[in-house]
Image 1: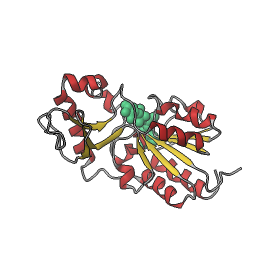
Image 2: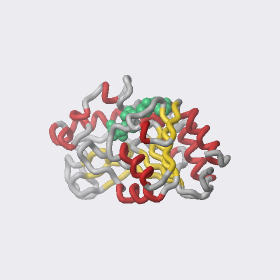
Image 3: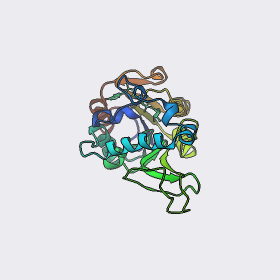
Image 4: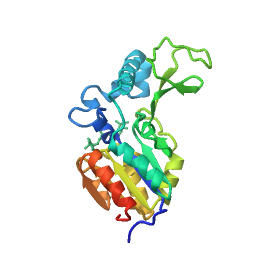
Length: 240
Ligand code: APR
């Protein structure tokens, strides 16, 4: 029976949806973790041990994201179109820290791993947008202290953002779609089980079967810029 046109939908995205926009994934052969170790740049301990190295890592990624050739791709655009045309809620939960979903005009969006274009102060938790490099010398405009300003990114060992709202959405949705994620990192890798247990249809759209592919009702392989627009077309035509 096709999905009811006002059924709530939750979409989880990972680095694979941004790959064809020119941003590297993490665990592919040419991925970020093949160039640098998580323990050196993506943990609170790394920041305490060598803040300059961590700032340099995120400054390079921020500069990359802001370069003119990095733009949303047809997969980001298809999800924004689905949100506009679907009668029910379409919540995008992204693990990505890029702003490509926003630039494609997705509105109902959660960044569970934070945002590269935001900074927060570890001393007073003040946050603000940032489009420049961050330095260990920077002073927090709110509390005036130095050395606490860090990328507003969730590191390994830290709690992802908005988990309560995410679980609420997972247990209430009729369709859960996972796009461009390897299914290696929890809690996101467990979302399919949550949604499935609550009765949702679960679909994976990925270049290759993820670690959790067998947990999905359907697993569709292909590049996101092809499989996501095609799936959104089927959804809007009442063919899912
Ligand atoms: N289209 C669709 N999927 C793709 C494409 C593409 N063009 N290119 C790669 N993929 C798939 C890969 O096959 C892989 O399954 O995207 C997935 C990317 O997996 P990862 O590199 O592990 O990225 P992700 O799943 O988002 O990582 C989750 O881990 O390192 C942490 O915080 C980081 O948010 C990240 C989290």
